[in-house]
Image (cartoon, rainbow, N blue to C red; front, side, top):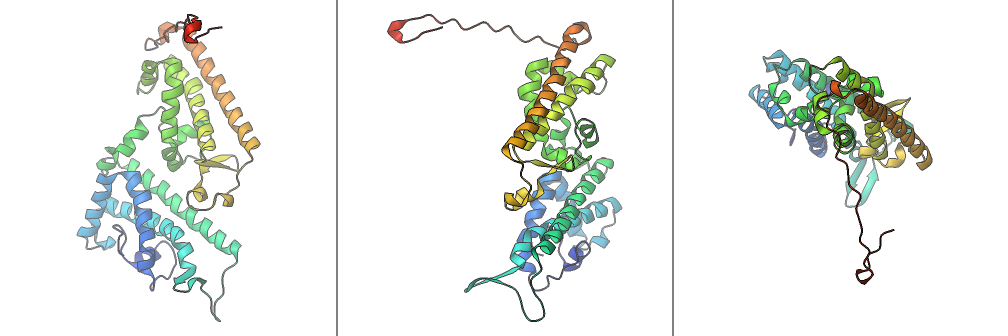
Length: 329
């Protein structure tokens, strides 16, 4: 298939999704290529992506000919992601015919257009399969770090390791993201923002970095697990909700799938008041955790030698000068 590096044949696509695209492979190829770039290259990094491409190419684009079982399995999962999410993106163009007469619906005496609810059910199913495959891929790479060193050395993985809450299972103990690695990956930049703008100024940068070390004292573990991490997780979710990175589904946070591609009206958008109330509650709870954490630190400063008290800020003194139009009250 043109433009796509890790999947080349209709049969490989049909291993993951039962579709017949024999007559329009060139039409949908750009969508599969886009899915490959967005969800494979961006998630695992260029170096690991290139390793997979070279292995696939060396096998003459025949997955079964790849001798390394783990590499073959990883590429198979990549193909699952590309097939489902690529087809999801291609569905609108597959449903119509574009020509000199404009846009027309495909229909004849033998077939008729599916009902809208059927189309939506199919799209949701394909979307779920695609993102489940992403979870499978990320888990597989992490479980075999020696086999996938380029991913472990990638900028994408390094960013995840640079924040305080590094695993989806741990984040879910503070706010339920259903142990989703992809959700955690998608809100990683927000977690970093909260650390830089709110956590570091509160407890000092040096103490925040010390909390990220592998070996912690009992007091440091208590501070991290019972105060700082809960506050960090709740503030991260609050920001993610405001920025529409996630939506709530049955009380759990999940990626705003449809908002990425479709009209935002297709997702259940909460009213401004509902969103405000939810964000306020998350923020209030987070602030309570963090304030209690600050009190926990100051109650026994000897247990937290990395803590640096914030500098005392002198109040700005204004000298009144009517001739210059400067007045202080």
